[in-house]
Image (cartoon, rainbow, N blue to C red):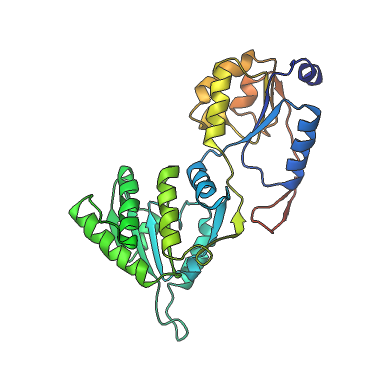
Length: 305
């Protein structure tokens, strides 16, 4: 039945929607499937999106990936709304790195300095040496203020307390070039592009953040997912397959997806549980597999079914 539907789509686009895939085996299977059905389009998205960071890195560095952040190499750490010890990207890795610079010993007589700017108290913020409050809507202005102060082209104009803080932050960053790092939890590509410019100006790239090893746990594209929803709304989708994702529940376009997929020539869910997609599609195919995962560039893990 599925095979008949695939062959009867008449060239209409078939979308395969998945969460981030970091398995070379699965990627090869998708390529082979697309070779047989050339109308196939594969889209990855993440329930907790890092698309803004990925898009900014593509624009700034030509690599659409999350770099390996090295908090253990940083003498000054500035976080703008990134809870890197609690929820941001890989907190278990970052916590271990961060702890190395927070322990004073005979070999390490100077502790790293951690400055946190955030809207609400986080686990990371509670560990900071200096913590400042800013609304998430002010993160862009804060980042731009730091960039201007670091490069000496201007000053911040937000609030008196934040303006003064940004001046001190810029002094700390400039005094520790090559040994400082700025991170940001915003999913806005424009803000992340400014943060990339700060890290470039303070010599962080290649030192406290590097693309020699990348974190491949997040590859999703909000742009691609929004384009899929628009095509679905306009009747430009022939079929859809879901694997290891639940966009009906956790994507901003979930309502459109739920309403439209029932009328497609083909709709299949390979999810391993009866969540929203299996209840909306025509075919449910529980898929349990083992695969190889490249969570970090140059690192391979074998996962049991």
